[in-house]
Length: 75
Image (tube, rainbow, N blue to C red; front, side):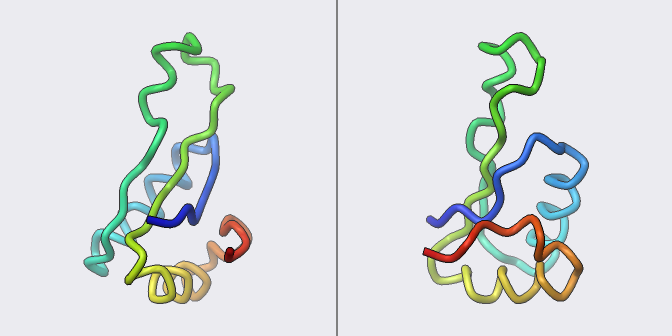
């Protein structure tokens, strides 16, 4: 899996997740439960990971949908 997005913006994360799910692109959100440790103050960003074989398709989809600025640089 490769990290595509790192953000504290839960609305952005939800929109991206919905888009990836609708396109049947394998993904998961890492660090989603860190708020239990941090006290829900939003210090730790959530990371959106995409399955390796879907990375190029996900990157293209998110860029076309206007989320290109949120994408992490390709490794």
